[in-house]
Length: 293
Image (cartoon, rainbow, N blue to C red; front, side, top):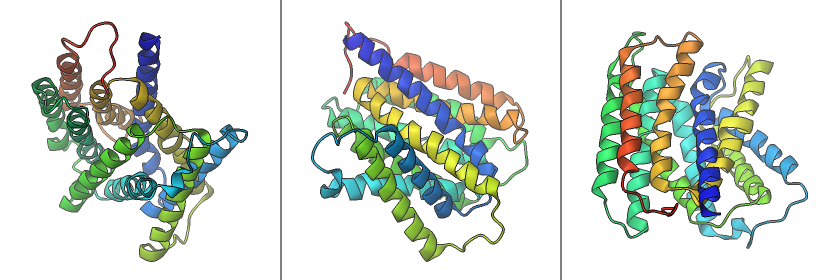
């Protein structure tokens, strides 16, 4: 049974990173400002959760009564959306995604410490290998598209927000569709408030802009959050952290397929580095399908 749960968690993790990898391509198709995009996406995600769990019940005490729900859950999710969407408009989407998805290193290290394992050499070594393999992607500039320092800083801020949000999901029991509905709706309201306060409403938004923004909410920032929460509760945090390193690699492949980037040696090096990291971090794991927490 444990083995089946672990396999299901791993499959959920694979689906999550695939959905996340599609985000740069989808974001590139629209011109809405970052927080308006986030508000539309989270509104669509809340509607999806409502429709999927219209007869369901909450998994426990109302989440909105918990301060962590607002500070870490909603705050982490909103921050991840804002900083990432904003960063994508300031340079090469492959590079921005790479910087953002350095967050798995922090997540794996924090998860190990919280689980009482300390800073394990295997995790550090595997993360270093993956990071070393990904560095050529950020240093390459095949398209000649410059990326500002602010773009990199916002990518890092998005990554820090991702760590907060993932720790929130991992620290709770399995969330129901109702709980996710509340989480997505709260993030939509927060994003809309930030849009009204700091952004200018678009003058010439098209139906495609609104439709793709909603699609982001249904897929990369809706279903993917739910599968990520499921994976965090049923699979190794270390292995899931390694899987997320595939996001910049997969997103680069998708950008190549749609003509936004060119195939290059750095992409191959990144792929090999991520595979090497996965091997290193999963060596000498506990027997009998034990799951790291």
